[in-house]
Image (tube, rainbow, N blue to C red):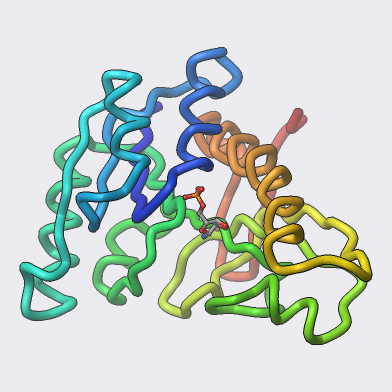
Length: 203
Ligand code: GRF
């Protein structure tokens, strides 16, 4: 299976996915990494593994529609089976989302539907939550609102800061995201109008 990953920053989730393809846990290859920012460290990670990189810089486009059209063209040239948002900090248009429905996933650092949007770790602490976590979900038109595929929970400790909590969540992100990409590459997931279905023995 062919995987395209979209990033804006560090790319630690990208790294976890690349590593899982290289060890054969994922039956697929990351064929391209696309960033909206030229400074994203994840581009370096991709180059280190001889993966094609593209920068599609949003500041060069005058509308979301024109940006997303170029983004979609860049992705489609690889004919990917799976399109992975891994810290890609852009809101996508409905047209873009429609084009990739069923093969477009995101990871969000909260137990969705809680804490859509930014600053999730601080918000969980401020609310006094005793557990927090991350969610891998299909992307739809609603920001962080698509059907959840898999979540991981972590405890929140009294002395946690947003940074210590984020670190604990990140460890889990790096486990569940490659797992869901693996399932998608093996076509073991189905997105239906009433939710997500897992097919077959999953592990
Ligand atoms: C992760 O926390 C992810 O949940 C969020 O953006 C962050 C990306 O981190 N969507 P990285 O670039 O993969 O290190």
